[in-house]
Length: 198
Image 1 (tube, rainbow, N blue to C red):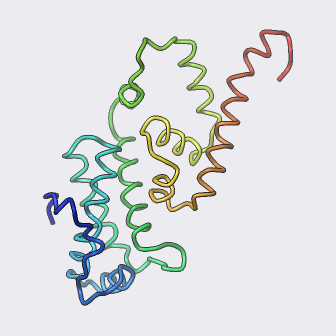
Image 2 (image 1 turned 90 degrees about the horizontal axis):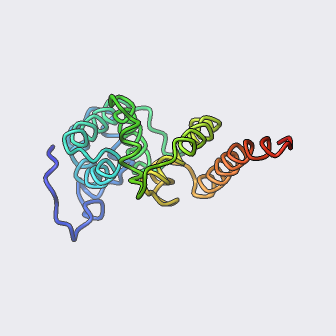
């Protein structure tokens, strides 16, 4: 399996292969250690995972490594796949997404990456930065992840839904709740300064 670019005008997932088997059927075969099924899933979905990896990691070597790891993880855990809980495509995206996030966490200086994502047009006010960081710490892990991906990486709600496996409505409601919590946190210092209680 390589990261060579396929025909950009053709979606590999739409090209029949392996006897016209569905992705879900291929995963069943993969659970029985069928390497042809793994190759076919890679052919159909590698381009999508590479595109997501490029947006999250931006470093080609990291993307290559993480996408390959994602398919290895899918191979190793194919027997656990439950088609009643998620489509095969969503399952693969979720595996890759988790691997990309782990790669970001393992990088030595995430604070510098955060500035790269945001690319401010002026030097940020240290007080504003501290307040924003404080507001982020009030979020739970899922909310923080959604905010970072949406506002620092530029993913749309529909892309976040595909990446996380969450329904679109759930993504939107969690984003709204996260932003409301951040607004409350950011407004608290101003209220306290004016002698009011939050």
